[in-house]
Image 1 (cartoon, helix red, strand yellow):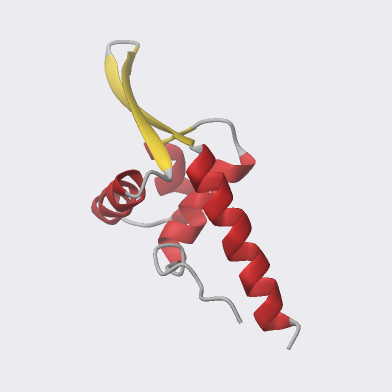
Image 2: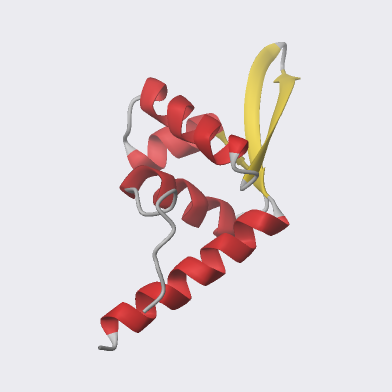
Length: 93
């Protein structure tokens, strides 16, 4: 059996990556709204995923207000694919 990626084997990080895999780009606020996690917790988990190269963070201004958005990287997509395949193996024992 394959090992599960410990970075993705966390509920909030997995939720963030799933949202990214399903959307071309998402905002920080979108993640907070969808996961109902605290802004601080989302920030910490996004930083961990960014450090791993799983997502890219983009900062901009919209209507003179700062906005943080994210996109998934090729590495992130590959990690999600590997993770879901490994999880399926566990479920089909």
